[in-house]
Image 1 (spheres, helix red, strand yellow):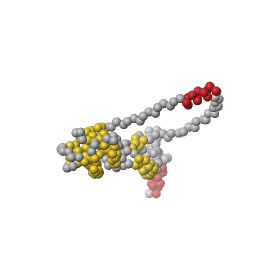
Image 2 (image 1 turned 120 degrees about the vertical axis):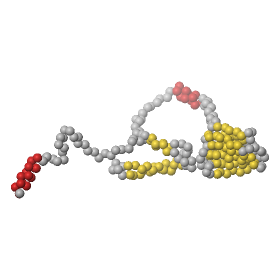
Image 3 (image 1 turned 180 degrees about the horizontal axis):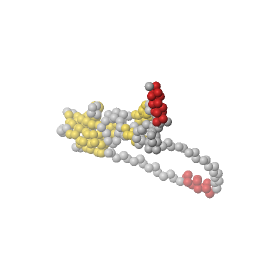
Image 4 (image 1 turned 180 degrees about the vertical axis):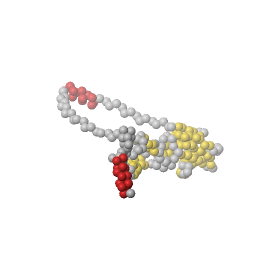
Length: 236
């Protein structure tokens, strides 16, 4: 029995491969190895939108995957105001390098004629400054001959001749209520606007005054002051 076991062991040793981890036909099988994980798609552009009560960006925190696969965070201070209507865009770009510009040492000799020309140029009258451009309203709507609204991006010009007696704001939905002193009679009407911050305006008559309700597209702080043609409502 011992002789049989010895003979069998020798036979197996003769037919065994030198390296059992190498395939039978090394010309057919490709031996590849990698420790690189499949990455997410290349960052192009990400657009973030904010609710209507957002006014300042304080900081941004990014969660990222490091080379070893762990999740880490990077925070960036911003501290800047912005318009919540705008899109905040996150994109990737190559770093900008500032190449040093060689300084040029140029010696200039001024002749007498050049001095006269320079003095004449300085004495020449300066061109008149260009007056600032007047911003046209995005839309203007009027109700009877009673009141008119000029709508801009961040303000509403209320054109009328009546005394304002009160104003207040109501949320959910966001709207500003303004009462003007005047005895008038008319049925309540709503004017659709959908321009700038104003979605619609409702005007209704009451005893001794009429009420204007301005429905806004979001949450705002507001200030109202008397102006030449009526009142200016500023939104921020």
